[in-house]
Length: 113
Length: 111
Image 1 (cartoon, each protein chain N blue to C red):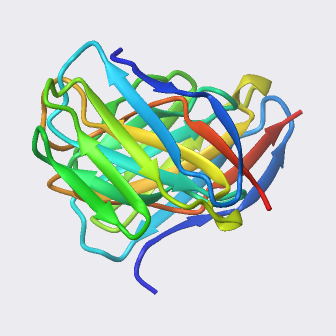
Image 2 (tube, rainbow over the protein chains, first blue to last red):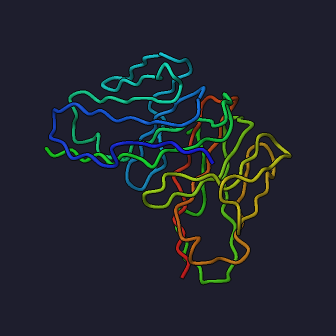
């Protein structure tokens, strides 16, 4: 099936630093979703993107829907310890706008105080 | 609280045993999904139900069956558990591509 390639696989940063991660696909996506998963919990939706070129913020988080529709980016500014977790990109494959999701492998974020 | 509720939260099975994982949502969503999560592999779709009365296979359906009992409930059954089914299982729901919401997961170990 279609795959989403997420990078980096893990990041170790100091509190206060900015974080950037991205997600790429060989096929177009009409929706990009970014999730965060805390230890022992299910993924929680952070940002949803529905249009190519769209730039959306949620507090210190900013995500962009790439203009080629084959990639998306998530930035976290001024990281804090509670940003620790696994970040996933996801989207409905096959050029559809809704339905089942394909997930990236995740980026594990560690923030040192 | 509105959301997706999964039971049980933890389960240990012996190889060959059967069990059913339960999922219920109270957001009036039409679509429901079962995913499994394994280290380094993200979440992979097992089965999904686009609407009440329909179910379809996802990426990794072998060894599983599902039942969409009504609009609220979507269960996942392991008929004969195998060690390869040791994983964390997540149920999710959505409505027309919006509001994807996940439950907190069932941690299953097959010994």
